[in-house]
Length: 461
Image 1 (tube, one colour):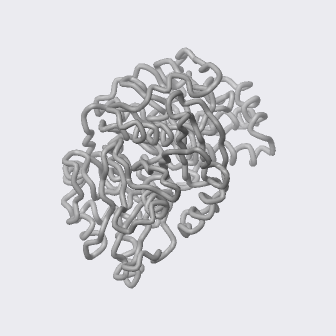
Image 2 (cartoon, helix red, strand yellow):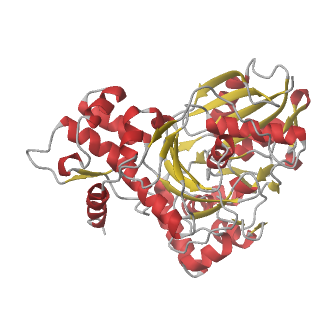
Image 3 (tube, helix red, strand yellow):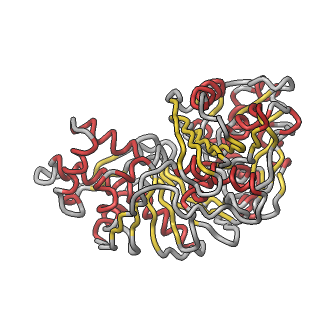
C-alpha cells in the first residue's frame, strides 16, 4: 500500500504521522521537541525534524510539511541563515507593524493590497524590525522564507526550487490572496531592498523530491493544514487551542478587514481562510494550574465546580501581550475580585472563560466579514481538557464539537501529500482517519459571561 508522511513543525515540537495514502489509516507516528522562545535558530528545527523522521520513511512515497506561520527565516546569497528566526509570537516588531501600516496609507490600504493589516506577528513586520534594529543583517539578506518553506527547501536540496503554497504565503504580508501575486514593493518597503521569495505552488503541485525519490508536497501553514486535516466544510468554524488560539473558517471569497481583526488568508485547497489569532491559549491553563498548585485535570475539576461567570471574576488572559485585539504590550489581569469570589474554583473557571472569551470575540469578528457558523469545532492540545467543551458551550450559540484527539496539522500535511501523489482534482476523502467519536456540547449560552469579559476588555482602552 502506498504511504504518505505529514509533518507538523510547530512552535514547541515537530510531529510526524505516516498514513495509508488511500484510506488515511494511521501506520506510525513520532515527535521531537523544539526549544522554547520567540527567537530560534532554524538549525534546531532541522535537527528535530531529522530526529523525528528517523526510521519513519520506509515505504513512504510522498511527504508534506505544515508549519508555524509567519516566522522570518533570513538567508544570505550563499543560502546560510543570517540570524535566528523570529517567530510569530515575538512582539518586538509591534511598532514596526504600526509604522508599515501608516507608510502605505492606513489599514484600508493594506486590506486592499494583501487582505490583512500587519500586526507584530506578520513576517513583513519582522523584516522591518530587522531592517531597523539590525541593518547589517538586513543588508546581507537576499532571500526570505517561512519555517515550513525553509524545511521543504532543505529536504529538496535544490536552491532553485524553494517553494511554498497560497496558505503560507498569505501570512507574510507581502503576498496577496486576492490577486495571487507577491507584492515586492511591500517587501522592499520593509527590508529596504527587494529579496528572493519562494515560488507559490498550487494545492497539489509537487515541490520536488527528497532523498530516496520521496515526492514533496508544497506544504502549508499550520492552520491551513489543520483545516485540511479535519476536513472543514462551509459552516464549520474551527477554534484551535494550541500555544496560540485561532478561529478560522473555509470561505469561497477572500476577506478584507480594515479593522485588522480578521486576517484574509488563503487555505490549502484553493479557497480562503479568514482567521483571527490570539497569542494566549493553552498556556493560560497551564499558568493557572501552576498558580493554583494543581495539574490540568484538577484545574478542570475546580472549574466545573464553579458556576458560569466565575462568581463575577473575569480574566483578561493577555499573559504574553495580545495579537487580537492588537495590544502587544498588554498584560493579563483579573477583574471583579471580592472576598467571596476569590476561590480556587472561580479562579480556575475564570481561566477557561478568559481563554475562550477572546476566541468567542474572534468568532464574532468572522461573522462580521460574512462567515455563517453552523458549528464550532474545538481542536488543539487544550481541546481535550474536559472543562473546555463544557465552558465553550456557555459562550457560543451553535453546537460545540470536540473531535477525537489527533494531530490535525500533521494529518492535513499527510492528506496534502496523498493529494500530490494521486494527482487528482480533490484531496482524498479519508472519511475515517482516527478512532473514536466526537463529543457534542449543545449550546447553553450565558450572556452575562461575555458581557463581563467585554467590560474587562474595555477597561484597557
